[in-house]
Image (cartoon, rainbow, N blue to C red):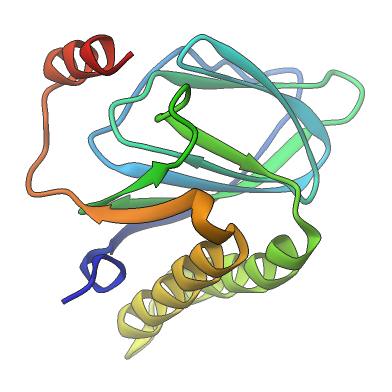
Length: 173
């Protein structure tokens, strides 16, 4: 069984944030994949400020502190998928926590997959969960294919506490 088939979709959600939005730094015991659907803003991820705009893809591993900030002039919107049991491994030794991609070949493939997952989740119809799982795996394969050798996927055996994750990040840095 490969790592892609280990991935389990926990949720799919679409958010659009304007002036009344408040987000604080947080982390999760699972990986999150963000596809930016509109507007622009900044993600703060493990102390890094990353500017994002419509069409960008963000991959954030589990237990990585992050938050989103929307532009006041151009409201930030995204589809986010919560994915259990896998993490991305980034070839860049200086960053093991996240990846931001503006590669058109990738985002053109990912956008319709994220949208279809969201629609299927919201519809709640028969075979919808199975279809979402299949679409997730297809999306993960596109991510791996279009990032070359710079990204791979690994299976996570179990959840790690936030404290253990912080110690691991410190040791790895």
